[in-house]
Length: 149
Image (cartoon, rainbow, N blue to C red; front, side):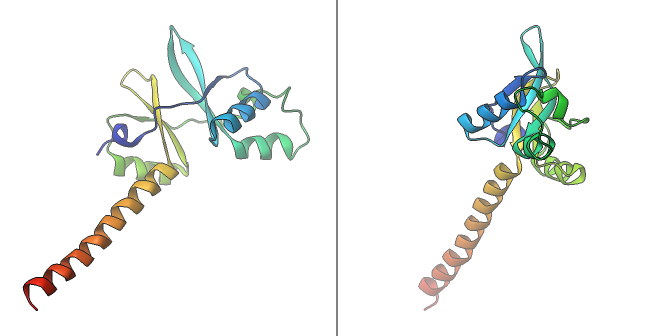
């Protein structure tokens, strides 16, 4: 399975010069914990950063700065980790762990933003797969009882 199979393609994006307040309002409106900061390159969205709800709290609110003045460019991380949509999912999980990130923008071969893979997405998939395996154990036991009373 590739990250393309699991990533969310409904993205909330902002330009670097948008205010942190606007980013927070977008997060609330769309019920997400992050916005992806992009640069527009002839109509293509190139990811340059990510801002999370935690970034806004820790960098702006907790330091008594004004979220209507501070921009997402001011608080986004210095380094953005992305993965190509063709990457294998379990490799991407290891990559997330090695970089200690919970959110991973997904790009195509040209570096254009196409989705995001989050820890929540991965946990939902893994818990579903574990549940299916647990059911398999139960089905095996029932089959054994039917065929060997």
